[in-house]
Length: 517
Length: 69
Image 1 (cartoon, rainbow over the protein chains, first blue to last red):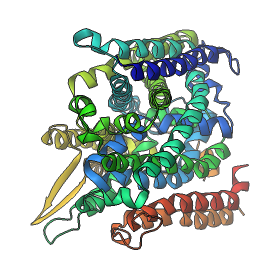
Image 2: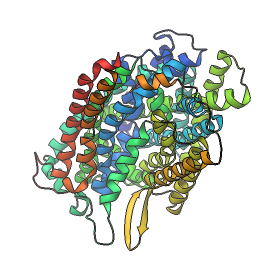
Image 3: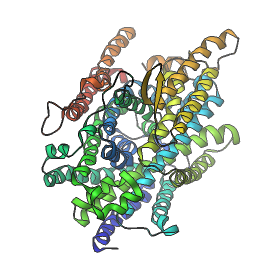
Image 4: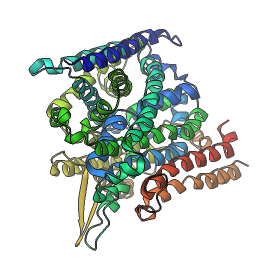
């Protein structure tokens, strides 16, 4: 290990240690009985506007933002910028739709989206489908976080070969698992504040210092090959990136708040107004994301991929190494350690919330529904704590068995699955017209079709070329699958009532929906 | 009274469709000129929408705020 690496590692370890302490201390913050699932998994639903802003920021702006997006911009150019429209249009959507989910969940004590679906459509089976989808779709997303930590550790020269290579990651992971178990949602909420502070410092330093070194933004853009600077224009037979870009943005935007960890973030807030205020404040993070995306071009302009010092890193991690290499090339060692800590902590916070959310789903909609209907609140929270550990190991399996050139594909893969819960959750908030068995059939076909498309692409891509006559339309597989899903749900909802198949009883009160408009 | 309130809320929510139109129709912005502070049009156009969308959301929030009570 070089001297520079050692300095970076010391700073990194200091900040990592700091948040670890915070994670354990958090169990006493806004004290509650952590043997209740409401307290462990939703922190008592008491977070106000500011804490919710930090929590959602920590929850939604992850290694996806800090590593995967700039890596895609670095490797593929303009198409990688789709994350900007994605993280802009998701908030108007949330503003309109999600306060309804908050209201009904608050009144009826729901902890998960599947809780709502169960009562709304009178179908524990449909709720099971929603819960399983949430858990499975979360795993590649957690895997993306672990990959983020792995890359920065690798960039500091940590890890040898064989078993030793994964040891630092496993240590980080065990620490994360321990304080999540102990403190529940309070841990990531408290750490999110520190995370934000060091992320903002890092990004502001990066977008000021690096362009100054490279000769300004005009020079940076000039270094980008012209073919990558804009989206490829459509031809008579192929829509090219003109359909790819907006379907990726739109599909990701609709999918984001269906993820269990997003719903957990929303439901832990203290009111509808808190959610609405936050949808106007969250774009501050989207602005940050757009700046971070620019780091991909800065890495190109700095020529880090041609620097022999980083050849080893690029060989190991592909384009995902672009941002770490850029930081190594541009910052003094102590600040490298600081910025890498920002990336790693930025990955730990969402990983904690994701595992909590998946644990909530398992406990509420699988364990209590099918295994122990009469379990006590204490038993419920114990099961959730244990499951939060299991989920993290599932995620570890994803990065071991499914290595990706672009880490962003892990997140997009999760999106293909989670978007198939849209009809049950989002449309369900407005109407019960869709029949429960129609929804289940639509979900099943949507998931199968979506997975089939991605497997045709060998799980390396999620943009599927649809052939309509002689025309090729490239689009996010999640959207194609959702169209099929909705069609089947709609057709069956017309047919099934005529065949006398009963709808389930609605256990959410109608007056609440009327007032929630 | 309630019906009128809901109609006005729906009208305000219509404003929130604008970011979708502005960002999902690629031909609006897939070009490099005019550049701004070194940023090609494609990039700064989308940067601007981040602020516009936040502003629109804030306007709709204040306009429909009493409905949350």
